Length: 107
Image 1 (cartoon, rainbow, N blue to C red):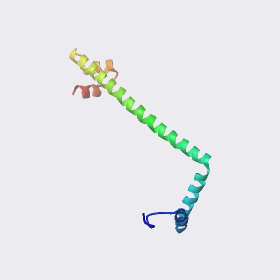
Image 2: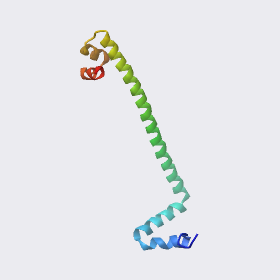
Image 3: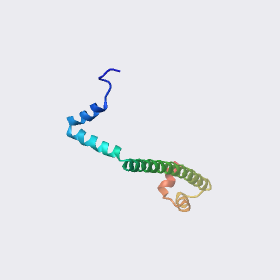
Image 4: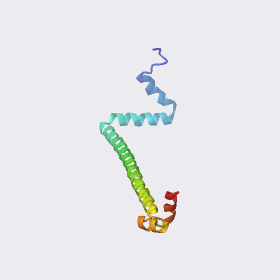
């Protein structure tokens, strides 16, 4: 590997001096890296966020499955009542839904 491709610790220390923003970021990173407790707290926060996002996604998928199953069961009931000669209004009343929703299912 040539010298240009390798960065030494000295190169990394000197690079941030080129910009005040990079210098501040580098100093913050150095402080956080040096402080094991802060690093562990950071990792715990990140894990909690990942766990929360995973839980929410899983709950959403489960809710969609339940909703889909309930929707299919409701549609079956609407069709059954329709074949029994019930009016759209009677079906809507029995299924606790709007007449428009009954019409939508029957279409």
